[in-house]
Image (tube, rainbow, N blue to C red; front, side, top):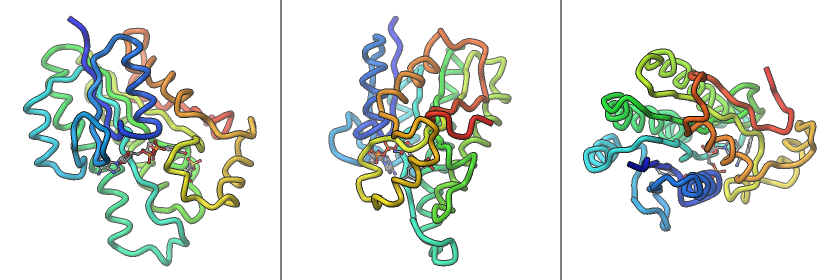
Length: 224
Ligand SMILES: NC(=O)c1ccc[n+]([C@@H]2O[C@H](COP(=O)([O-])OP(=O)(O)OC[C@H]3O[C@@H](n4cnc5c(N)ncnc54)[C@H](O)[C@@H]3O)[C@@H](O)[C@H]2O)c1
Ligand SMILES: O=S(=O)(O)c1ccc(CO)cc1
């Protein structure tokens, strides 16, 4: 029987490209998003909504791409609710999706989870403290689940993109984007399709001896 993938943040950017690429590989893909255009309207910050979705849907592949950039300002100016909102989507959302959907994968003996983190979670970015810290948390979660599930048939990995051309960056000031691109040895933004290619590999049988790992997709930035 064919496999089913669930892609959060699947209505836009990297999530949308992942959904398209996984469909090319023959998976049945369900996109989940707050925004219109997804197959399933889902707020990943709501544990009740996530549990309800998991009760209705068995998935073999989970791609956690839903995310927000959060406050772009000096850390001393970040308000409590801005910090909390960033962690609610970027960290708690990923945790809740894994907690709800991974047990089914374990019961069936096969699964792939791919978390979309960021180079910001490895390096930190000035004026993006909440975002950078949240993505570092996603890396910790990925490493922890990878080890916890290592003998279950379920592999959990993360990708760490540098700046990618997507709607997330539409509101970013050109000077900020220029600085982010200047950190990339290849001197360009990546595309969502380039990220999706790596995600598709991590979501497949072609990836078989890797778990709890972080894959940079960053034009040469931060390979440590
Ligand atoms: N674009 C970049 O430069 C870049 C770089 C590194 C990592 N990332 C990460 O890639 C992922 C995708 O980002 P993107 O660039 O495609 O952005 P995007 O804004 O195009 O897509 C993000 C999607 O997440 C959805 N979303 C936000 N909050 C949600 C919630 N509570 N529940 C469900 N869906 C929600 C949005 O509606 C949107 O459709 C994010 O996790 C982001 O942090 C992006
Ligand atoms: O992943 S990063 O290159 O650090 C990064 C930071 C901010 C933004 C938003 O414009 C995108 C990527």
